[in-house]
Image 1 (cartoon, helix red, strand yellow):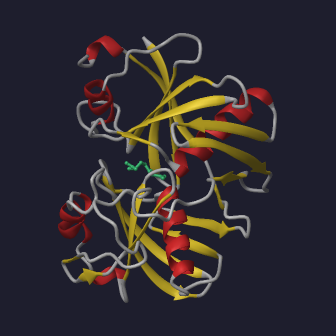
Image 2 (cartoon, helix red, strand yellow; image 1 turned 45 degrees about the horizontal axis):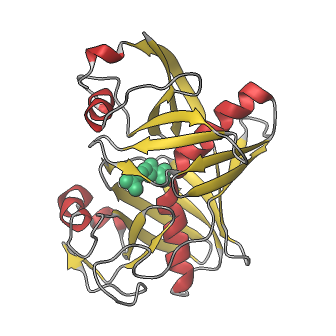
Length: 278
Ligand SMILES: N[C@H](CCC[C@H](N)C(=O)O)C(=O)O
């Protein structure tokens, strides 16, 4: 039996497995089976912890419920930092991902601690998102289901942000899949739908690559603020209100994006890996 920790960031939920002491055989098929909400434990992403090494406290690998690996997961970054900080009683944790090292700082709070992750600088070039051809990443020639003209960037994973007048008027589950899989995104993309409430407040819902609609998407909130600021719709800092709650996002003058929000453990348990497909 293998212990796991069920965590979430604003309801974007994770099964966290710990392979820091010994490797765990987690194939894409096994990750998908564990993430299944009926036949497995159920989660938006499966998070595998590996030993950190020089300059990082922990390595965080990220698998979507379809088994695909992602380079970033903002909400899980805060959760993993909270888990490691709880073990070490330190207020700073460096989480290493395949897209880079993310320093996270604990912000002690009355009701609950908040965690501020430095998600690094967004990648704004078409090849960095990536997109299928050279184009202006501020205005993509893409439209579907009543939305059009998104901006795109990478925050360690690919994001497109559509700016819409009324989020509630959209059937996101109807239009998300086709946009996620549009050939303009050679690695697919996370699709954000953002409503600008004022220059310091966005509403956002995200159809996540490999996962579908989630209650929150940390990297998507970072991408939405960056894309909004690039278009002059907001300043360089805003509250991003997602269905699961609020994140504070700041695109610092040095180019780094800071994401501040909560992290929580819902429960712990054990699972029999051999009961899941290899
Ligand atoms: N579905 C995303 C990974 C999870 C991102 C999200 N849960 C977050 O908090 O950033 C992708 O394939 O790039």
